[in-house]
Length: 141
Image (cartoon, rainbow, N blue to C red):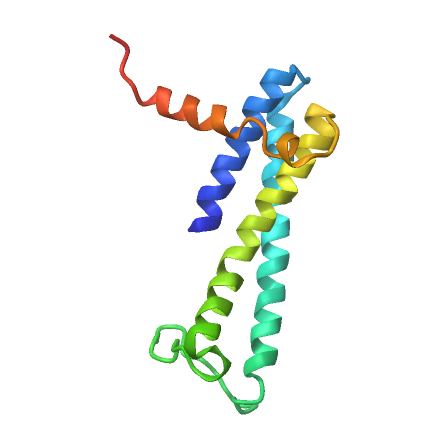
């Protein structure tokens, strides 16, 4: 859910930047940005699953099969107890979409705006994006 919301915001950001930079075919860049976001997020989610299974691998037996309809075994057990486990779970949940946004930001900076690499340039245009989104909800009078 978080990744989907961030993907929508990232492609709006790329679309507005492409229009402002007057690049040819801004929708192509929107598609590329969505693809990059999705691939980065998918790879990191798979990596997270691999890491989490490695952490919990010593606790489960080889014949463990999870019932897909049951959510009863989704508990904070093993290495995920306490504040450290909570922070680890939050990190693994938020890292893939944030990395996707960073990948889209680098793509936008190097291929659309062609500006020099700096933190200010990397995230430029986000305020304008939120301003235009908020303006779109106002009714014309």
